[in-house]
Length: 348
Image (cartoon, rainbow, N blue to C red; front, side, top):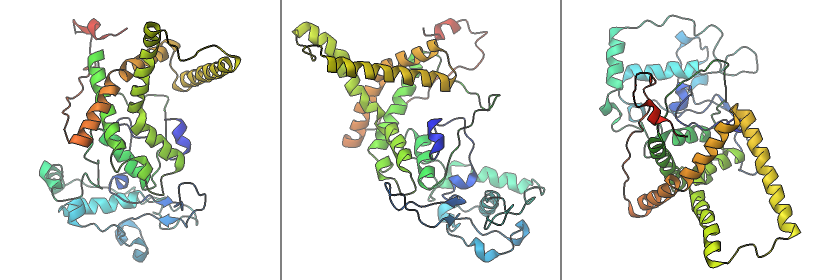
């Protein structure tokens, strides 16, 4: 996550994030630069955000500069006129602050300090918008809002945002900005990992594959998203690697016939590299060595079980169209002091 902050930002993994509303509404970011290709450094002229039309009451003096590039039609956002008005307001709020002459089409300072009264009609319309049937025959779930069609809709949604040119920022505050719950035992954790890995396999075999991304997705960011979709397949090589020692002992056939200086040098370089990566991970994440080692142990457990099952389930869904049902991950309620079975939730 931290390393991606220097490219287009961390991948959205479903929690601990804040978003601009316009990023969910299929709008372009306020300022972006188009790359002519994935491997070329030549850039096209910077474009302006696809912001909807803003009225004079919001402080915009030139209405012609706020043309609608993404029309606010009912087919896209639904039939709620109040919601369409709020989309226009959100687009205006997302414009860069016009605090110097270099910012074009920005919002003037102090434009967001006005009161926003809450009426009963607004509340009633909000209830209408959040109903399940409101998104029927609209683009919600396709290009607007969270993207449907995957068990890991969070990753797909973030991928679509980065593909349009939006950037995310990695930020860790001194006080915890977000807190959440996690699975309380190994079984629930493996169920969660299975669902994530199956979603990654689905992404790899879908049009959301990073190899098919648009020109606004930078090369290194594309590789990061490709890793998200391909990591479950490493379980195949991991399982083979686990069986090789037993196979060698039973058959008396070894991969390395004899130890040579070249082989030992390669082994030493790989070992030192892995140790350096481990030290960097511990330093960046701020965890202890024991916690890092527990995470490595669970990676091996998940790689030889949940990840391998996810590859098989993903292939069945892609090839045979067999849908796999998942159960919601069971998580702790956060107050285990009164739970007589709380000791059973610990896995050591």
